[in-house]
Amino acid sequence: MSYLELRDLRVSYGNIEALHGVSLSVDEGEIVTILGANGAGKTTTLTCISGLVRPASGGIHYKKTALHKTPSHKIVSLGISQSPEGRRVFSPLTVQENLNLGAFTVKDQALTRRNLEWIFELFPRLHERRSQLAGTLSGGEQQMLAIGRALMASPRVLLLDEPSLGLAPIMVQSIFEAIRHINKTGVTIVLVEQNAKAALKLADRGYVLEVGNVVMENSAAALLADPAVQQAYLGG
Amino acid sequence: MLEQLTNGLAIGGIYALVALGYTMVYGVLKLINFAHGDLFTLGAYLGMTLLVSFGLAGYLPPLAALLVMLLMVMGLVAVSGYLLERVAYRPLRRSDRLAAVVSALGASIFLQNAIMLFYGPNYETYPDLLSVTASLTLFGVSIPVMRLVMFLASVLLMLVLYLFINRTRTGTAIRAVAADQGAARLMGIDVNRIIALVFMIGPALGGAAGVLLGLYYGNISFNMGTMYGLKAFIAAIIGGIGNIPGAMLGGLLLGVLEALGAAYISPVWKDAIAFLVLILILIFRPTGLLGERVAEKI
Image (cartoon, rainbow over all chains, first blue to last red; front, side, top):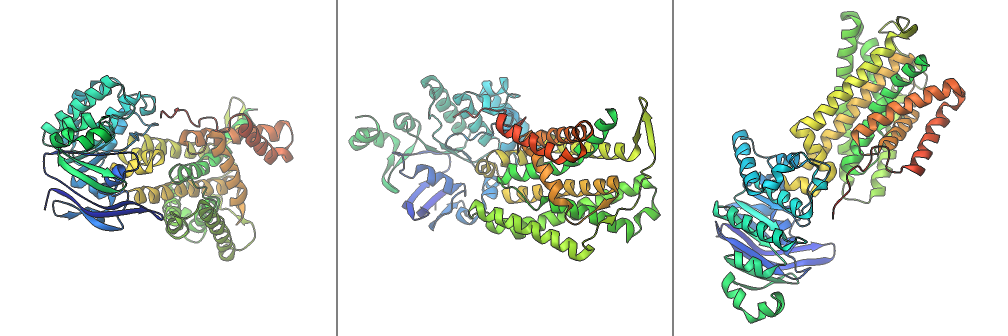
């Protein structure tokens, strides 16, 4: 079994089934990207891994643990954290408080201090604004905060949902550089992106989701060269 | 003037303590806990039982007895709040909002009647723990000691709460749950535990307020939670519901306005003034005085 494995995942919201049996696997140290149009089920897949949404059937295994049976607040301490869609920083709290909350499950104070230093190195802007309320940050800064907050948990697997959404191109570039850097430190990354080209250039492998089904999986290079992918997601 | 001001601040402290319970629960669940006023009443009665039936005052000097009684009442009412959440609210967490509101109203009726059945429907005289007649003279105005104790006790409790909410890990987690429950879960915060905790802290403060009020006025009744609960709810709205410093400010402000209105207009207008303030706030500043200070960025 792979490091992180999703097997035949079915998820419904009310009467509508959003995932019709999604299977995908992630190896340790990889960057795997999940591509697809709006409503394809990318975000649902990630929220399922984090335990915020429960599958109707199928399973998610991380190492030997069945995540679909683990309460969401315990999943973080297993080493899986997420920077969610829409960033969802705690706006009435300061940047520093947001980061502290990211380390909520971490007992080791020294580790938290090291992580904080590393995040401030990765995103110097957050250091400048650490006593500012998160709601007053720009979109790009909030994105950095959301990623930094997820890193404070010392994750082994980092789930990133649309980290480039709504950002200026220059900001997108620095976010993607940061992701590459995080991955170099040994963190496995699952990246959901609209910006398919940038994501495939960064990733080792990719999955393409269409209306709740995996329709393609391959190495990132192969997907990048695939005419069907180019047509649908890379603007022809 | 100073006389009325101190009276208003003392009563305002009570409103503020009770308002904190409303505002904290609203903050995490977007629910008005209508039974909160009755937990306040429960606190007053439990304090009376401790003093009268267990003769707490006999063993200790008055101030120490007050402190011990307050802590015991807070603990007991906190447990009641916890049970209330488990029985009346948690099973309905995923239901329609209206279901929880009906359940809250039901819990209020239940608590009020339970207190009445147990203690009787009459006014009860509160034990005279700190001699109410003692007073201090300040700037030529005599201020009853009880009034000072009451104000200081409520300010102290609010200060402790403020530090807890703003300076501790758990307090930050409470604010995170209030801001975004889903994101809080992604931080590894056990949201159910935080909600249970809020349902203990709020009632604990409300229970303490009940004791202080009993000592101040010298009598209590099984249904006093309705009016005080309503006033405290108004105070929470004045400050901006969901906002903790807002509840403190709203409570003190309402107490002072009521006291001044009663003195300079007419005592019979006291309750009307509270509602008038509410109406004015709802018209001119619906988010309350301290509500929504941060603009949400999309």
